[in-house]
Length: 368
Image (cartoon, rainbow, N blue to C red; front, side, top):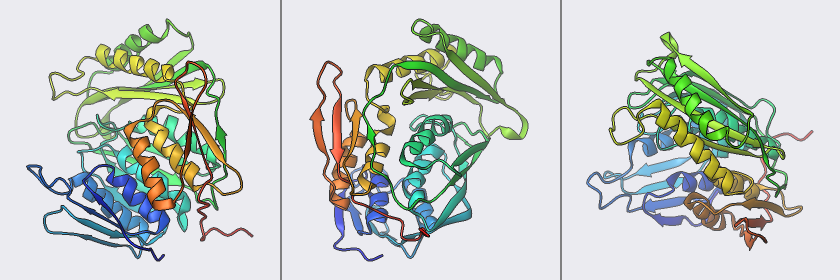
């Protein structure tokens, strides 16, 4: 895959977006001044780990990082995929940080991807692996990616030491069909998972009770499963948390999650605080309207930009998150796709984004 002139960026923000779009478009990218004014300049361990994972996934890519770690040059290769990949992720970020990056690229790989990741399954800065399984993956069904798409949590790993393990399998597709996602519908039910590792199983019941105390004022159909890990299914650190997903009558999904921080005294500590906080976050996401929650806006925009050029794709979103706004800029830079943004009529405060996709196809997928 030959690229044109390299795109140049400064700073460490949205590094994952830039590397993924560089790989899909075939355009080289140069990123300079990565945390040059920081006490510890250069790439963080999770960013360097993501670059190594990208190198495992692709064939023929050229990656160079200078001695200080403040300059990254990346020339993409072909997305190969394959089975039997194993990658150990640092405990500074959750496994979903790496899984989302794989989700962007795996459908366009040469072979279906099966990868085993090890690290923190439920962290503070990213969506949990439970939310990835119950909200992120069902979103791909709207783009025609449903069969052979699987995700399994083998071990749970809580911060700071992690020790979790997951297996993710993703099929390949010939191309993304243009779709319209405009109606989110009313919420009909809430489902969730409350997990505990190396703590009392009663903590899960207390989180569920406090979450239901908030949500049952609005709807009765709230069901939260409890998952108490013990023995080999535990990671290296104690922890607990909860993930909630609201489903609407139009089959849209809104999610929220959180985990307890047992090291920071000012953060969420008690199970009751964790449960009520997540329930309030879920209500805030529902109140924002939009077809997807703020955590998945960038993912939807990315797949719409890859769609075939036969007809426009449209999606209705709430107030754009910083990641979604930056994704729009990166899509314009790498793929040349510009979204039209129209404010929705009414008091919902949503916007309708439409575009004609770049028509990115998987050249390795046979069509006969």
